[in-house]
Image (cartoon, rainbow, N blue to C red; front, side):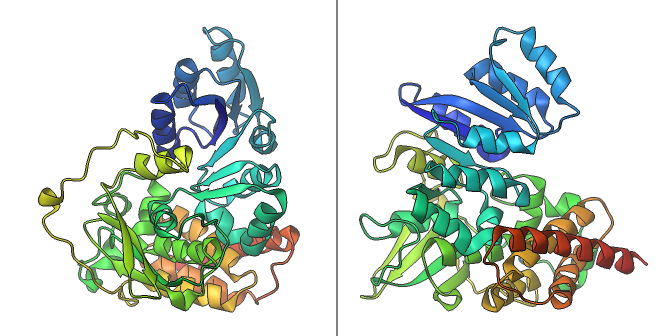
Length: 394
């Protein structure tokens, strides 16, 4: 049996991972579960899966959680708190695989800790890779960790790569990657209506069930911009070799174009249990709980090129990776702050891209060759973005 640690257990990816793991109790045991503030959901997960460790990041909530566990049938679970505890459980000796499912920059340090410890890293936290770039990939190579992508698109690309392919390798057989995107809820909305989009409309994704932040990123297509940067790093490709294709049905999850003209596509229902099960079972396959694809019900598949006027965040992502250095970190940090402000009613939907672009203009490109430089750039971009939001409000 393999031990698994799930960072971000109460989010949608964490819940789906536990669903898949529960279907194969002879193969996986849950060693550690973590949550930020959702202690009610974490408590129920502890009752069902009985991990050795549970981490509550929000230290204000840990005492109440500890008392509930102590009075329950799983009183022997070790309770930890704070951000450092995430790194601790990610590096436990009896953990073989770490599901990195914490959204945003908060997932960087524990995901790096898992990589440094040589774990099998199941990467659902794209921001960690976007921020740390080459440092993360170098850590994986030096430690002997195995890096398996969980995002449906990157997992699809991985499945379509040549036999024995490992992330970080450059395959000379591959000409380009076709990275698919649903286009989100505003793919056909008149441009004049976009400034009036509400948070409730932005989080209502037509195909996928995701958290609020990722749903907004999908609506702006920043999610696809971050995935493009992630794909460059995971598969050692240049930005111009990543072609983004809007595919509203979300049936083809991505494609790989080979030098001989062959294009391989991975298809399936929009259910995150499919890529999770693939990564957990690799190099074999086992049952995920997802239903079979009914190709007759799908009936048709459409494809179109993205419009940078409609999706300026996508343009900014290409500008960030082409600029290099700390700029992808700046892009990610500014986006996190702007999306949070939008969800809180402080920004219009179209102001998200304006804040990101102004933040990128305000910060000079510097090398991203140490973790300290990256974390400093992250904090600087957050500070600048908050100031820009105040100015926009004014």
